[in-house]
Image 1 (cartoon, one colour):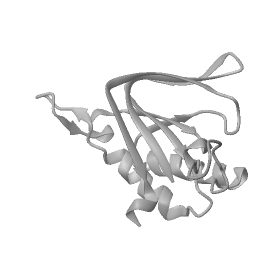
Image 2 (cartoon, rainbow, N blue to C red):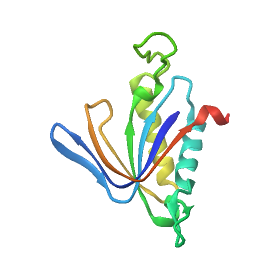
Image 3 (tube, one colour):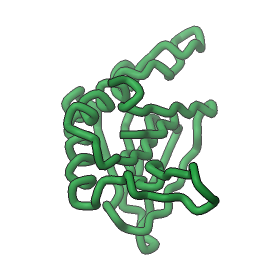
Image 4 (cartoon, helix red, strand yellow):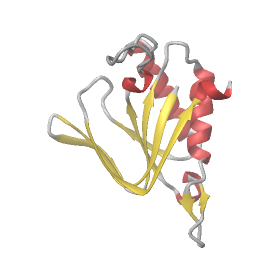
Length: 149
């Protein structure tokens, strides 16, 4: 499971011209699920997202987590994070989990994050989405569960 986590002052997702989810200060999480990912990957990812200390404390140092600041999470499926570009210029997505299973894994991830007491909003799995954000900092962190197995 691979995620791009962006600290945002606001973010939203639009489908067919309609805003379906939006958050204030928090994290926009773009997440790709690989065909070999398991429940343990979702649990690992949720723990890392909930405890990632990149929000400023009273001294302006990145020292607070989403739990500390009651941040919101906008979780968006992005299978293109599973791209393999080792050969040629056209990405291969053969390592991406098949859609029905990937949707279940993302739901498990959302529930695991909510288990920490955070509010999680999302897009529509498989839909063509337009994601808007104001990256705060900018702060962007790449998380990959397979690097920590």
